[in-house]
Length: 148
Image (cartoon, rainbow, N blue to C red; front, side, top):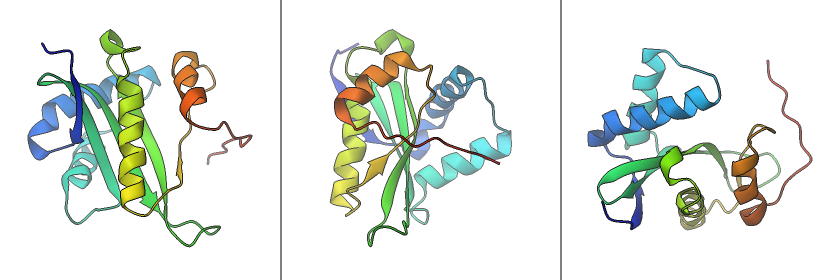
């Protein structure tokens, strides 16, 4: 397997690899989704009609090793839409090799190209390893998330 890491949009042929990576991401957060959610999410990520819900895969050689999902949405404090980076995952075997940074930078570049320069995300406070990266490439905000 080549050491080169490439980033590309998620494609319909990626379903099995995407599912494997997203399942591992969900399990990290002790969560799961129904089969309907798997199917609907993947369809949206690959669809030309859902242009505001997107994703990239990271590949080492031809092997998918990471993913990122991002969503564009309107924002009341800005004229242009913003970008919410919803899910980011790198296989444990490649963590620390720059995969997460490359995935985030791909979202940054795409958001800039699409006229959505504001990119934000959330993580669990216990996600210390990922937060080391986030602290280098983004600004920590004081906001606390509430949910219904």
